[in-house]
Length: 436
Ligand code: URA
Image (cartoon, rainbow, N blue to C red; front, top):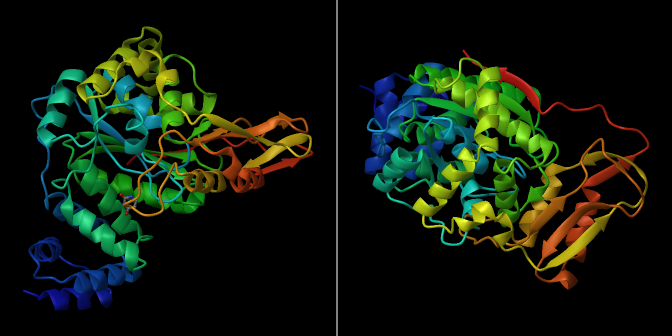
């Protein structure tokens, strides 16, 4: 049997490790026998040498079993979740989970907080007065069973090895490593007790993966490893060059997500929700194909069934369910600052990364994990690539508490847009789909 130091050296030299060896490394890390600096060294060796699919499955399962794996066997039906790799204005989870649950597929969802320029579902949901995302796993399982969906944060019991390893990766330049990303994402998702997973792998300026090729590589690895771990997994690649929808900022985004369930909402957000929801209904056995699934989703919106699930979920999680019927009850900062077009023409760029960073600078996001966000501030994006504008038209509106401090942000948001003489080539929302 090789020692931990020998295993680190083996990976450094490009050798593959056996399943039991990877399990041993994680177990030693969790019981303190393997020090942080040794794990950091293993992570850097992995960064350069990679892991094959079998090693990545072993790492995923070792991280998954470092904590509790929820048992949702008492909940009838095929449980399916969605994971997005993160973007700007991506509030899909908030409308998608109740919508899919209303169609008979239970959705247990463990979500994250915003970090960097991307927003987080938990921060958006907490804009609802009273809404709690820190429920115990028993309450989570009960609410999934009774309401059909529940949305919480990663508890200390869920994949604790990932939490510690991610903290090390963050400070050792080993985040951008596909097998480590795959094991990190899947260990948390598989701990939810799901049967199937739909992945929304975002591509573009505001995404983790900036180009289609690297997004496809990540999506393929996630699907292959998730499938080998015994789950039904599909990935959809979607564009994240411009923000999704119009709202960027927590309460604004929650309002917009609820609008989707009222049959309103911007076309790109509605389409993204329908595409991902259709995949979830097929995986969950509630539709024979995505065409039939879309019809069921549309019916759940028009009948009000999805709104009713959302109301029950909000109430079960301690929130004020009245915001579902009346999303305008969600408080938005009192002052509006217009960001106007300097020239007439056609919008050619509405840069998701820059708009996301501006929202963070306003207080809608955080630059360190221990910061609080301001739920009421944000940006409404009125124009997207392909839209025509006259000089002076509003490209965006800032929602701020103090308008006299907003000039620099307004300039930054204005610089996120380009207006040209002719329209850019239209960019599809869906850029690919991967299944094995
Ligand atoms: N998201 C995660 O959960 N883990 C990663 O490693 C990267 C993105």
